[in-house]
Length: 284
Image 1: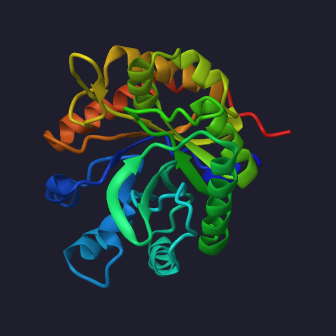
Image 2: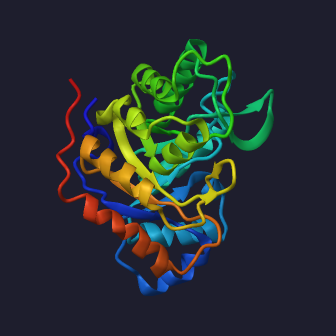
């Protein structure tokens, strides 16, 4: 699978998340932004302000969809009603790929509304890859799965997180949304080396990268998306770009959201890491 399967030859560069506090500024000022990422679930509706704003955004900007409720790791198969609504939105936005998290979150129709970590087992690899393939086939565009930040681990795990991620994406023939902040948060919480993580994943499958801030507590880090990106996360991003090549990069800022200009300026710091990056390699 070539990396260009996701970008179709286009350079997406650096984007930011489309958030309600910034609607008015974007529509009035029309800032120069590479692209916006939207949370799919916020726009899977029949009408209203959200879709009206989205249609105005689509007139001027490229949009990529990111989900928070697909739960690829559930033991049950994907919900078809959810997939039909998602496919309608995909047709509306023209998103080149669709991303969601490598997690589980519901049992027998009861939803936790949380991104719960997976047990890294071979059984989970098979079921998760099956679900991703089903979604990808139904929606008709590539899927990229995002690594979580996590705060607990399963004793039943049979491999590392990065080995699990690599197995899943190879068997599902899908992409990776590599969240470098999540790698850092989990590396501190679970005491592993982020360099081992980066070395253990198929770089040609990295379709997109997330950057974000987090909060530090006495015994753990928490992925809060309410701070600027810290130096260790920038260092992981630098290594990821060196390994993966120039890759679509998105800054997440979802709480205590500052002005549009402040968020945009933080995102554009990524640009200094991109020009010297090698071209993405093609898969063998």
